[in-house]
Image (cartoon, rainbow, N blue to C red; front, side):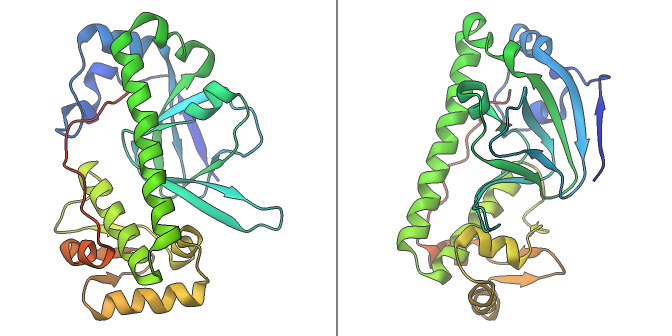
Length: 249
């Protein structure tokens, strides 16, 4: 698996994500402070493990391009996918506070990430109350997402779980600029969906066929195209949160 690190970085104030409506504006002083903690940019290919459970990782990352996911594993290789990450997400914050990572992170597609040195990054809390709030907001948003996933695993039927996951990722991808509503293809395999929903692969396949029969989704190779997000929301009994500008570190 290929990876490359570059120290020729795009300035934070020139980052393409900052021109998107989904992210809040940042002052010149804040951009300068963040740029001072940035140590490089990384490109990694599909399947690369960026963070390994049980290890010490000296870096944090902000996703600039692509999809990734974090997960926990049992000793026999079974895994539970905890969450999926898109541009603007901050990866590795747990290790910055608790030292050892208790989850792994893998690139779902080719990715580009900003790299921050963990030891220097924490001085943000000393130098900028606004940026410290942004980091806290990002951590709180991740907790909220996990709460939603736990509700789905514990209370939704298999069909409701699948509908929730797919429409949740649809809105995450749409609002992060990974696709448009007219070409909404999520790069998931049925195996990944099974590991997220806590279902067998056979049960997952049958469940997804039922959603396809309702013309809510269609499979295109190793991607799922969302045809009817409103219909998926109805099946999942879920209302997407209002879109509002979110922090970007």
